[in-house]
Image (cartoon, rainbow, N blue to C red; front, side, top):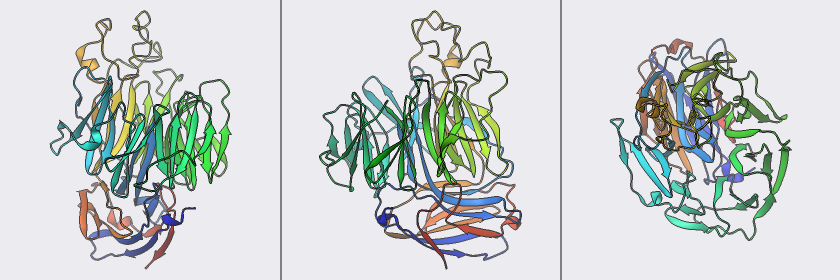
Length: 489
């Protein structure tokens, strides 16, 4: 256990006026930022024990990228969410059929790689995309994501890592996939497949001289954390956990396709988005096993070769993006049930005749038959909404030989969608050794403050019933347990 992750919480629950449903102040002693997952601050429950509200820290990992681990979230859980879904267009134009999303400080970023160049766009207040130029966007030959560490950006490239604009690692081993958690930097390099784990303090130059070195089977797809363990999946179905210098293998490849595309802490377990079931696995104290109930599949499509590529928590619900038909599913923990939120594509019609969209039409074309499969590449919380990015199999262009597609269909690939349900606010926060968060909700608005400064305000769901709030459970919730001691004042 990292001593530097110790967090002392002082909770003050106030019911100042009858209209104030929740007013919670929390004094947090964060210590050093060591890349640790922080978990849940509280959940509010009603008389029947159902979750009404909660707060915690966003943290997920989807196909090579850690998603926005330094955001604080406050939500009111709608009993019957009715999302509004808005298409925000293709940030990179008609020929760029793939996008990903991340949050950098207070910006929502879309990025796309074309050849050796990585382009970035940011979303402005008018829901319009505009190019961004900054020091950290000048990547060498790839972009492997960003993490906020001690209020500065740790930027992962192909063979380099930069922190606060300075190169701290320049590999002689070629491109890699990187992750920082629990005070350790994880560096995976190809050919041979090898994982290096080294202790790192923000600002230090990275050296592998004293790294723990592990030969692994396959290349790394996702990382995640389960308390003081760091989890690793590979593209051939190997599953590992790292703790205190030792790497434990929990799943040995059996030569069959088994891939983990995403990881997310969810209550007492870590969820893993899986291919080819299109559902989830879970890892907890009992090891690795399928998550129940499984994600359903529409009657109109094949149950084969499905992939749960992306995971997120929004509004107190779990969301999952599923290949190959671009579906977004929602899971209610209390109801123990899945529901289909939307398919973020409307062409072609879903069918069992094609395992993937346009597979028959691609059968005699000079490209993979699943070239036009429909990915949900990111599910990203930002301000009051959940943003969805899309891609064909590899973000490749539409070619003249693909004469079976019209412009409107191609325009679906590489587009960004905004899912909005009233009742959540997400905000970047400033890491301080000690700081105070305040969470306020009434029948009109929901807000987060840090040391008296507003981090953001959003609308309350009209279905929110302030009379139902009964008690606050500290240090527990949908984002996993708080890795700290909690004291109620």
